Image 1 (cartoon, helix red, strand yellow):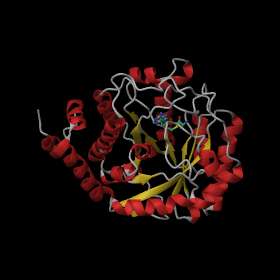
Image 2 (tube, helix red, strand yellow):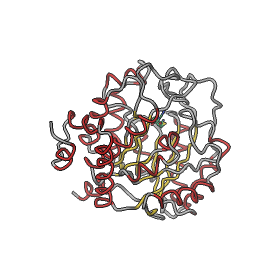
Image 3 (cartoon, helix red, strand yellow):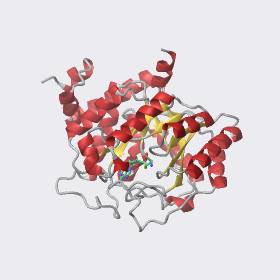
Image 4 (cartoon, helix red, strand yellow):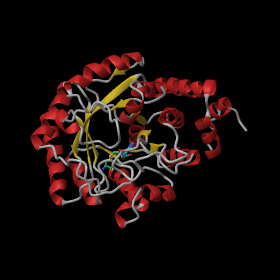
Length: 361
Ligand code: SAH
């Protein structure tokens, strides 16, 4: 079996070797994170780009077994931001010099919703003189809908595959027609075809997941030639079917370490993509996102949802910063990132260099 050094040196990213990397502990584990951090600096530099995250609504037509805003959760108070609140949040991001915003929401597929997103996208482009980049994360939609939003000015889309193993996917979702792996994959394929910079990702440490599954997820990102990835630890939510850890569940600290290794390995496999340091990391370790930046991530999504709604967009227990207003985020993040030897790419889109190269080629 090759050593960690050999795997990295010769880029021997077979499933077996990826599992070996995911198991790396102690000095080997540190070496992995360090090599990934170094490669990031070479490939995409030390800038971290902000995407102001606007959590538009927690109304959702889906019933994913792990998610706190699933349709069947009657404990959650459903909300919808007003248009003015969304536009205000976008103005805030623009003023603060964030290069881009992300509009995320539970999944809704009716025409009212589709037209609303189209309109908001157009208005945000106008109010920012075309300068704010817009990423959408609004679940599975039809090709026509994705095309309309793209035409209105959204240029990136995030849709996590959640698991690239269809069997595991089935265990994490209800078995009805609205929750098939095939549909999710088709949506991702459409996004790429339409011309979005396409982002995907998985949760780490879900029930039933093995290290081989995570290794296959990494392979999937590479084979799909993805432009951006966001991955984070799975964290139980009290009001879901997965509310208590299973007997063989990894402790949160192990899910956290595994998440850092996933970021690092992916950076080594795909040096020029954008990788997010996700909020779920921060809910386990207060410096979680900074640690991910050191291990290869280059994107952070500060929450700019108006404070009063934040507590209701609770995907998992202990989601951080739900008691803050947007103004408090920037200063806090600035200070933290200095710790990670990074610079913030204010006023820049920070597009995926991987995507740009494909575009030219
Ligand atoms: N409706 C959109 C956005 C979903 S929420 C969509 O379908 O893409 C964004 C992400 O939160 C999900 O893709 C999922 O990976 C993550 N998430 C949901 N529940 C979670 C949990 N309990 N722990 C960690 N991450 C979770």
